Length: 420
Image 1 (cartoon, rainbow, N blue to C red):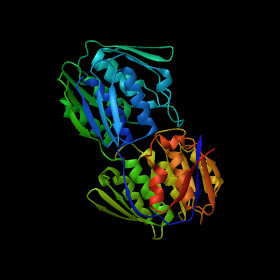
Image 2 (cartoon, one colour):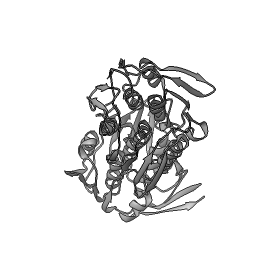
Image 3 (cartoon, rainbow, N blue to C red):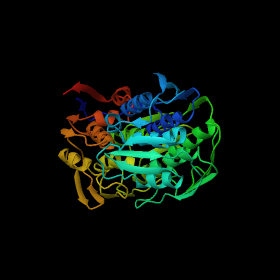
Image 4 (cartoon, rainbow, N blue to C red):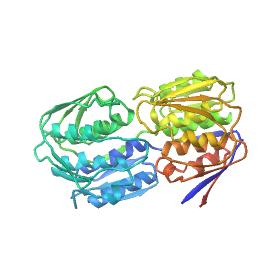
């Protein structure tokens, strides 16, 4: 295992380039299984989760070459229709091959997924949607066994107890490209990554409309082809570097991003006193001004993203006054709070709400990451803290941030990776 050792207290300044969106790359790589033609995918981030997905599709039958964020992939024939436990347990997003295999082969055997320990994320909406398309599904021995050789269009409501589901929307959309007739997904997720996957499928030859709204229509049965597709920048990485500027009172130019994908986050930055300038595909963040407390309500897109909640908790822990964060999506996503308190933060958890009393400054400490975004929050806290911070279990962070410490060092951060 590895750890980060951080000497905090230095303002970050300079320019950082944002990598491709992890949450687009994973389903798009899985979606490449739909066609037997060669594809080129550009702007794929080099992450542990991407490595896991590539291992999975290679096991299924893909031949691939991945260099400098450019993936050449070709699945001329399927070698197998099973996604084995040893691979799937590493990453929840492995379930995207379920819809792709049903569409391509009419059957699939996919292990139930793993991922971060941030609360239960059932796959019932995935199963509901795939069954509506005509797939017979059984769960046995920790595997989803699916058969659906004659998929048909259907009207499918994917409203869940916590709102919309990005994963279910994408999985059903992928499978529906092979269904006879028209599929209408209502209560669909609107996230930019959903739009990106739909645009990728349309690029291949699918006929999908309504992406970005709560109703997506797929006219299935189209022949899918070949070509080169570039995925969108990662909005959560963008937001994370913006928090780094705000917490260190620095000024960072964030290049190759899409500011409109972060409108709710930008609103919160401006509300607390962080100056932001958006120019086409660039954000300039100035965190040198006085800051004020705020209240955050986490909600599906276009609301405040759950994947930015931990980073903002770190930021608000050093903002004067009392702030609150209400987490409405995942039950166990305040796990970073205890570690932030080890650094001097004053945080009280009351059910689904965190109450944060801002302190003057955090102090360096030994802390342990519990999940991907908590890892980022602890690194950000270490950058702003007085003294040395050691963040352990950073393998969580390597799942979702490409060359994180390298990018931070270019901004002036004193951070290094060491073996445990």
